[in-house]
Image (cartoon, rainbow, N blue to C red; front, top):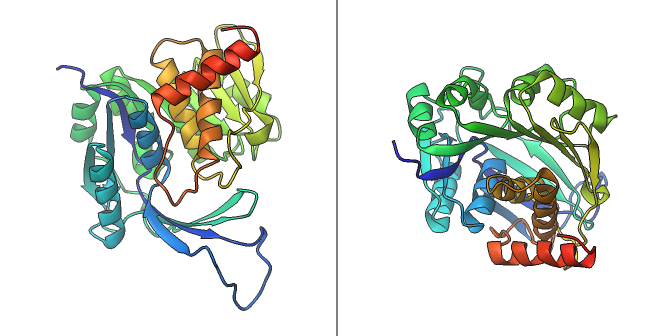
Length: 309
């Protein structure tokens, strides 16, 4: 079968309600007036990784479970409008949803509706196999159905990446993803010792590259080839930071774009850092991601500024 998908994105489709609050933690009060409005829009982690890759010129296909509900309609419309192919499996408990509180400095607090999923949720193995057979790579969200799809992806022979988000390095649920992927992203937010976690992932799992993102502190990169932990400095955004929603997804998309082009891991991290910094300048009420020309130009500018490639 011909390969016509660069990245198959599994999971992470859903709807967020964005609320810009005066501060975080939000002071206890009977009510707060939200002058910026309250916006419900399609876009969770898989949606935004797919969007980021699509804007970088990659052929993307998204597979996930959606409900026959208004939230599912928003996700379907998002994919149609963006031109991102979507294969949906019916989710009886409804489309995933969350509320994101965003402070003036761009930090966010996410509240996820845990009723929109069950332990027996599955992506049909035949559907996973058929799409994987057409794909170069699969990016897997850490949602329940995707854990069961990992063996099918491995059997299909595609490389796999995953984002563990705010894993603490201990919770057992994330281990199947951490140890079953070739490329692992994780936020350093809940990690007491990011280096120890990255080394554990590489030592025990399949990953040849593991990355811990740390926001304004940059990122930490470990490759199995040289066993050296590399600190990647953060990139200063070209505009004020307004919203950190989607920054990790943008980092993953930028990194994957370069990685699938054969770039060294350090260069991939630079691409990820630029894409993540751009995302922080865009309100998450808008579906926007950096384009390929802008990303390449900024990475080239940074390389020239430090006197190297």
